[in-house]
Length: 223
Image (tube, rainbow, N blue to C red; front, side, top):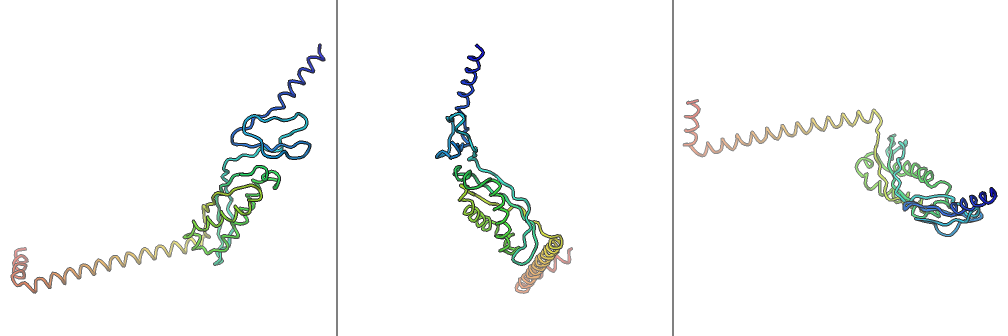
C-alpha cells in the first residue's frame, strides 16, 4: 500500500514538473541534454520532459531603464567633468541574450560606461551643454550597434547631469553676472537715448509752432 502511494506521489510530482507557466513579458530558454531547443518558449503554459529538459534562463522582453553612474570625462577642450546618463533597452532576441553573452544586463552596463566616456571625450564642454540631443542620438546608435550581437535593442540614451569642477562653476557664475550687468547697462543706455530723442522731438515741435511755445510758456508760469 505504501509503495503504491509512493509511486502515485512520484507520478503526480513528475506530472506537475512537466508544465511551467511563463508570463506574457518573459520568454524561457530551454535546454535538453545540454543543447538549446530552437526558439524561446512562452508565453503561457510550456511542456518540459522531466529530468531531461530544464529552463536555462527566463528573459524579460520589457524595456529596462538603467542608470549609468557618474563617469569621469575629459572633454575635447581638456575640462574634467562628471557625467551620468540613462540607457533604455530591452532584449529583442532572448536566444542571443542567453547564448552570446554571459550576462546581457551587466554587459550592456559596461559597454554604456565605456562609450559614454569615449564619445563625450570627443566633444567640448560647450557641446555637452548646447548639443545634448545630438550627443544622445550618437550614443544611442553606437550602443545599439555594440549590443546587437547580444539580441539587445537600445532605444534611447539620455545624458542627465554634467557636473562642472568648482572653479569652473565660479568662473561661469562670474561670467553670467558680468553678462547681466552688461545687459542692464545696455537697457539703461537705451532708455536714456529714447528720453533724449523724445526731448529733441518735443523741442523741434515747439520751435516750429510759436503758438504752442507760447502756450507752454503760460503753463510753466501758472505752475
